[in-house]
Length: 263
Image (cartoon, rainbow, N blue to C red; front, side, top):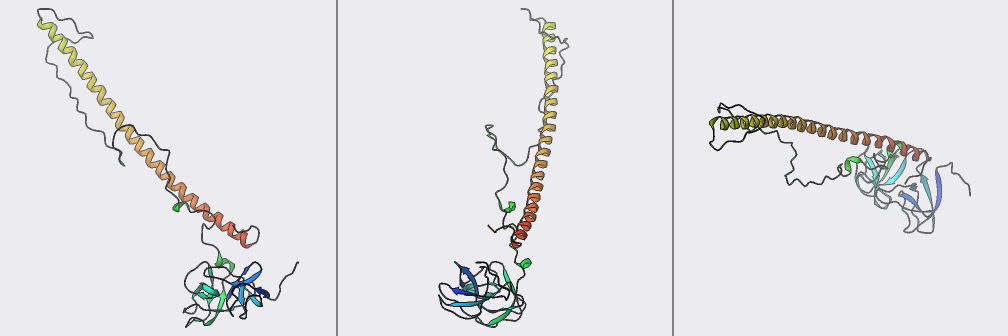
């Protein structure tokens, strides 16, 4: 049956538990029942009725203010929220119901409320999309470490070279081949052998120093790249969070316009 309501007042059959006058009500299988704390509602019951009876409900889509029962005390101009058994209170629960025109001095007071506009009833940011800041920290693929070393958060500085250059005072002449030393152990043969060993030791020391210098440069480069990766990941997460907020606002607007259904 296709009908529409142009008066802002609509009659419903009362559901389980009945309703009280000036209480927020919601629909439950086409019957009006009391809305609980933090729950959305369709309007305000205009009389107290038992289950099975009918009740006139002032729909929230109607213009003007509404009279609602207070669950506790609150000041004028307070933002009020849905409380238990259809009442309102300034205790945060769900989305804002509206703004109090007058103060409530005791529980059960009937107070005038300006219902919240759709813009004030938007869900909190990221209601549709998880907040990446609340997600688990980003991790890279696990690296299997068989080094036997102890991991640290800081790359160590390259150590100082410990290989000293050997001073050659043998007086011999270095060669690419160590000559055989005769049975008489001629002093010249021994001197030449020592000179050869000294030259090779000096070359090894120079090679080691060069490798250590390269290692220091490579280590610094790795540290710089890792720092950049960390910065890029943080920037990416911030960008995703901003995009999620923007997308969520669009989804909420589409829901309010009736273009998409709320999940």
